[in-house]
Image (cartoon, rainbow, N blue to C red; front, side, top):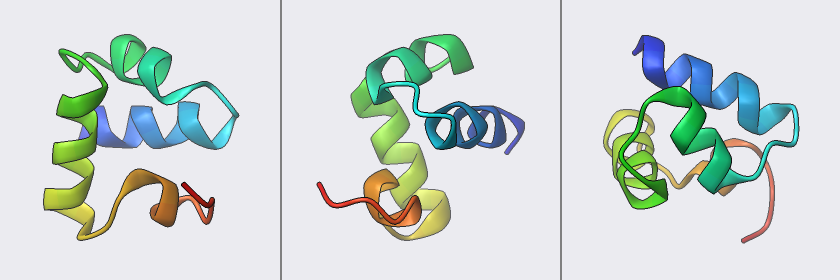
Length: 52
């Protein structure tokens, strides 16, 4: 959860998703995407209110 919270903070600040993943400790953007979907039940862009 802490890693996801760090990622959300960065993504909300406008950091690109791939960089957000790397800076938050995920292996890659796909790992971040899987974790977000599993824990939040929706894609990161939807969680942030952005269009894909």
